[in-house]
Amino acid sequence: MGHKYSLNVVYFCTGCGIIEVPPSITARWDAERFGIIPVATPRQANLFLITGYVSVKTLRAIIRTYEQMPEPKYTVGFGSCPINGGMYFDSYNTIKHLDKYIPVDGMIAGCMPRPEAIFIGVTHLWTLIDKDMADGYKRYRRNYSAYRANQERVLGKLEWPPLFPAPGEE
Amino acid sequence: MNGLRCFRPRERNNQLLKQELETAFDGITVRIEKKNRIELSIARNGVLSVLSFLKNKGFNHLQLVSCVDWIDDGQLELVYVLSAYMKEDTFEKVEELNIILKTRIGRDNPEFITSINIFPVAEAYEREIHELYGVIFQGHPRLTHLLLDRDYSIPPFRKDFDTRLYVDDFFGSVPAVEGEGESL
Image 1 (cartoon, one colour):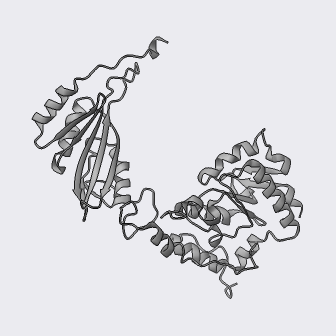
Image 2 (cartoon, rainbow over the protein chains, first blue to last red):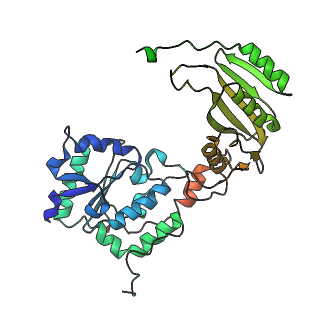
Image 3 (cartoon, chains in turn purple, orange):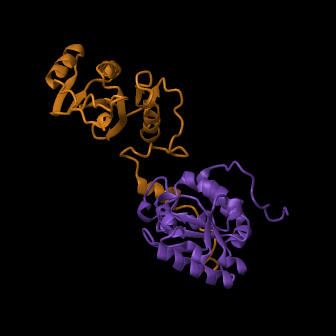
């Protein structure tokens, strides 16, 4: 899996965790040592960092962004909030478990995780890619109808067509 | 540097303003809290005339419109905070006084009149209050969703909205997609 050393991460801001990303990718911590480069559009990216709490409105943008990324693609939840809601566990407008709506390959816990934690997470992701365990995009294909049902349950009717055909229609 | 020199704002006679307000409007309560803060409260049908009166007095900045849910009284309280802008050319502060205007409206099917005609900036605040407290502002051009994405049975900032119950019902009922062992 050669692309593990060239992770292009979508520059997508969600919640407060994005404040850790500019120091991580610039001179001080220099994520380019690990082959991580932020790119402007999801069509050029293969790593999606969900940096913080996900409101219902943001979930719509996350799904659209994720579906535009070319495969293979990896998703990493960053911070406590995508894992189980974090400090927004009883908020009326925040998604609690991100992995119910899009597949997640790994989570970096903490509030906030420091840049070092990002790099530990990335090296761990390398191992997963080597062992072919970072298979979120394959799970998304396999369970697409269930993911889509969960997405529509929260967001209402989605205005874009399904990314993959339903089983039996292929 | 001359342009940025600090000017002392003109001292307004708060007692005089209080007298003017009390003679102009019936049933208004004026409370001078500090040298630079006055709190007014008035019945709902006098709010717009007080707002335009204060705007003509130089309080041309509507800082925010807020709302408080007094569930025990069965009322919602609208709060308008007014102050004055600095002068555009010299940055001279013309006024240090902040005016807080409060009024109460009924909590069941709350309706009020929009203040966009006096302060256009009120549009976003009134949309927010409509969304989070369910107040309908008559004459508002677009009372659509501002921050949220969907309708709630009870507007979510009201005191009787049980967030934990809602979270359990709505988000907690979404099933996990993959079984144990399949995901990481």
